[in-house]
Length: 84
Length: 164
Image (cartoon, rainbow over all chains, first blue to last red; front, side, top):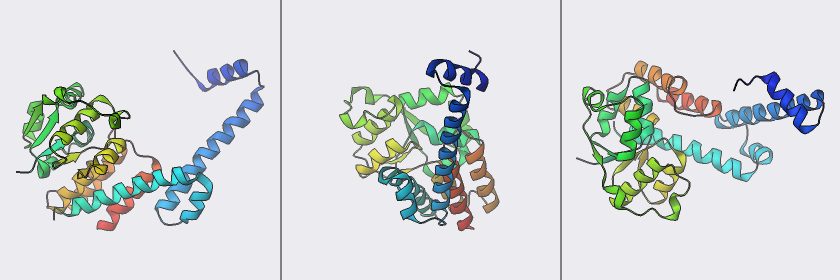
């Protein structure tokens, strides 16, 4: 199946019964939210945003996931250096 | 010689960036048969591993082991890695880049390492120069099939840069 953005947009407009502008506004919002979360996590990991800000914005479960993955990477480094 | 049980990910990812030899620091490897099947399906064979100085064996015995409910979130090959580690009392080092499998193994006391840890260990023992570590880790992040979000790729770059 050959999918393009235009075909996806047409599908959404027809199936949801919403006009194109409404679907595009929703898409923009979802896209910005995703990019914001990605940027916030990056800034947190690099020590430029406080933990509290991530907790407020993304909630405790997502923060737990982020901190677990960060701790895994820190342990990777620690384990690797033990070989020295 | 300590045993190392390996999942598909680390071997595949290091193969993709031409750094299979870094696994020599944890060789010999034990692959559950479904992991070995996945590796062969992705183009790795016995000769490639031997050319990289790696010794390994394929363990088929896990088909007799019974998975518990804790393995429900895992893929079949990951379940086999867990079962083999459990069979050996979680004593061997386990290689995986799968977070769910890692979490389960660590909750049972196993030591777990992934592709990034293997590269750093190779650097620590002098098998990779600082420049080779930098280029290899960059290739791992950008060219291999290891999945990390942009945020975590940036974080790994910072961790690697802090080593220098």
